[in-house]
Length: 414
Image (cartoon, rainbow, N blue to C red; front, side):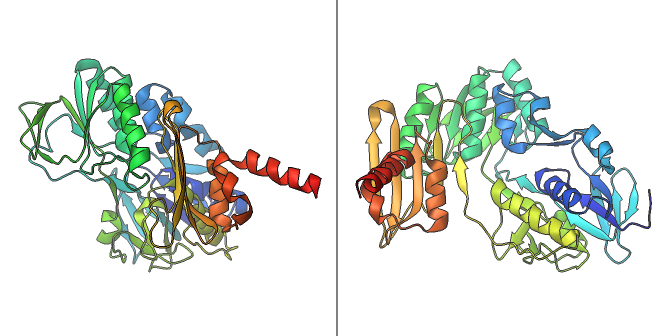
């Protein structure tokens, strides 16, 4: 390698770090010698599609974003299956688990997040796992081929996707959720009710408003005890109760962290040689779990690494989709509403369609769509633009086409 060039070391071979590398290679192709260290023994893959790998709708090759050949082609040295275990900030060097020591001029930390494992008795039994990587999916698939019953704890997006995938693999699945509605951060009670009915119709058992007390078993987990004393038999327990930024490495080298690694608007940490992006960072008190803000962080960070830095990162609003085939769900903005807001609601229970728009001062501030999500992107644009919808208010629920057709009609008759 030509060491006249500055050296960029990337810790974390996931979506955030590699998106930043990709953007950097477009902006300044020959600027750095780039080395990437990843804990997993693969190239970079699309974590968002893990639920489709689990359900059998995708195979591993289809979720790969950067194959080993891509790294070679772009002159990026990949150390897969070899995480960095120590950072020496004074000498500006990293040390990997396999004993590689590498100097850096710029360091990019993209260690992502770790699944939260509930501190329950029995949570260390074989058969109790999180849902975060390809290895977790492979453990679930092995369990599905050997055992019959599974419990998924957590009724958020990931929990529902895991439960659906295991069910499609032939397991009897019980989904346990502590709230009385699924996806309570994205949905209101009506839409959550439709979702519950739909999942139960597919054979999932739901235990809502339920708290897990303990996991029991001998050589493997065998049953789950709930706070009300009831027990659910299961040879596989998947915890999908959220993630927390993985900041252990950053903390160990003395970088300033709160809930995440604290970064400024250029994604720089308190050490000017070190940047951080993705689910491990905290920007203006916020941490991140969705892909849209992470892509924007990667873009801003790459521009500063490429020395064309004029961009600033600002937190963006995001929309949520459920990746369960046959269930269409879209949610964006403020879906709960509050003082001074009003709702436009369309319900068609027979067709399983529900739409709710939250309005304030003639602007759309939130949208929940279930069963028909075609106009999700358009509603999201209206939210982003703060568009005045007074003129189309009575047609808004029927979607973009209907509103535009009406506008065209008015123009024609004017």
